[in-house]
Length: 568
Image 1 (cartoon, rainbow, N blue to C red):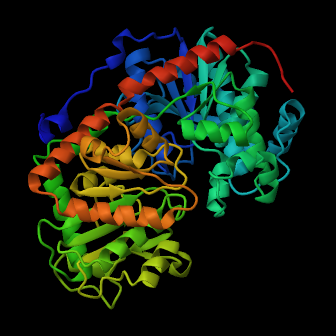
Image 2: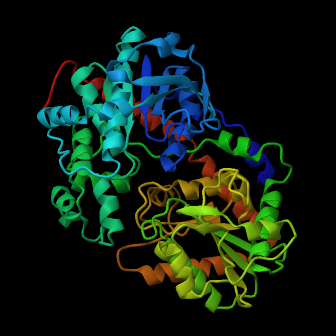
């Protein structure tokens, strides 16, 4: 069996050298998360770019939002106004401005940042046009609707002008991600219909909203009507836009079969292609760098912070467990994770365990007393021993309050402690000062007991770094593991897929607690074997394997594109 070190640094070649590659002259991809790291779609696009660049060699252009000169893009964007035949110098309609350059991710693809603020002054006219041509209901808009639509329409304007500037190639495809870019797709259908369009739902507005409002989704899915639920949950505008974008795109895709079934019911449209999310091993290589033992250095940092915060001295073999991701307490299963850790604590296991919750919240600042404790000056103040950063409003933080309800405050002599890290691990958080990928190899197990998870990047990221993981049957990734390797395959794959439905919460809690306890009892050789199995499973979910589904989407979009038509 290959070693951990060999698997971590292996260079990935394109498995699909014999796959059919449709001829595409130009590819645009629009997302709120291009050069803007706020969620999982950033990982989808940034990891996919390397493979697409290898296939289409500089024909792909990513388009993201420009928040102005005050916004720090240094980690993500490298300006280069000479790219795209000096397109930066073009005068664009309605005062739209752009910056051209490259996205600083593997493959370094071309990127265009769009200042969409001038479009917001025209929103009423645009919304009227969208109602007239497509029936998009923008009357009930609120929150991020205006900015999302302004950005997407500005992006469509840029795509049209850039396509013309580059000679109006016949086989051009524009990909739009999530409802936030749907209005841009519809704008292109009217103003540049020769460009084939792909719309990808990484989730559905109504599915996420139903779950976020603690309504059972899965057992009652066939009884839900998307339009009716959008009125009940005040989601009419977002749902209306998403539904029309899915219907009018030349190719509609979802990231998993889970979301495909959800889309059929709530959007009344089954996807043309399912495009599962892959990963790029080059991101692992770049994160690990030249560190001789990235796992050891990550563990040292994690244990140092835990010790400085709790005042306890942990053994080197302490079990380090984590959950992470978007701050959706119920949807992401943070509630299940906390109850599982509390159950484990009640069993009083022999081995020490520290459970980390790496979930960004409304953070005020890093704790000065913890910084002093890490420097060896003084210990932390008072009884606050499980929070690394102060919160602006702790009374309204569900994770913080649940740890207190359960007594997970690290003030006793329990062998199970909890550390809540409510910030983005971007390398400058003030406590760890390390990127998430820099800490990830240090964990022994990650747990993502999601209730609503269209795909599930966090467990895939974990096994890509050799960390065994837990996910559920309600996640797209969990379904892929089950379909590919069968059920009960933890020892074979390093991935435990726990069956979850609307009513088996306590069963899931017990199974996770039991698995954590089981991992804590593994011998060193058993654990190292599990880590190797995790890496081998991750190799099967690389973009080099999954990119074929995007190539199929390109083919479908080009085939279905009917130029110069307007559909109401």
